[in-house]
Length: 147
Image (tube, rainbow, N blue to C red; front, side):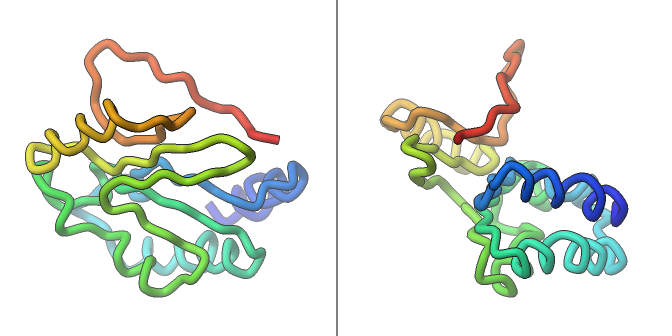
């Protein structure tokens, strides 16, 4: 991971002049087995580097960031949100403007928040929705950059 971040990820972001990172959730692979070595690595290789380089980051919660499938109340991103000024964790929903476009950001949908999330989707005027959710037979369109 260290080699990827040092040799690929950060050099590519800097080459493209990107200053804001949108994290689409699932910062972690396994929500039930997150360990101190993984947390230390994430801090040193990613979060510290983002802050050192002056990148703003918005992160939504994915299903692997939350402990339970039916609520987002217990999640792993809180420890990072409290530690880094550059990081804004979106626990619920938010709309932000980047590059002349409005982005709707929406964390993991579950039984507890389903109704409010559907209302948010219906009522947002955003150009782009970044969310972490399951939609049967949906093929997402991703990988674009705003100049």
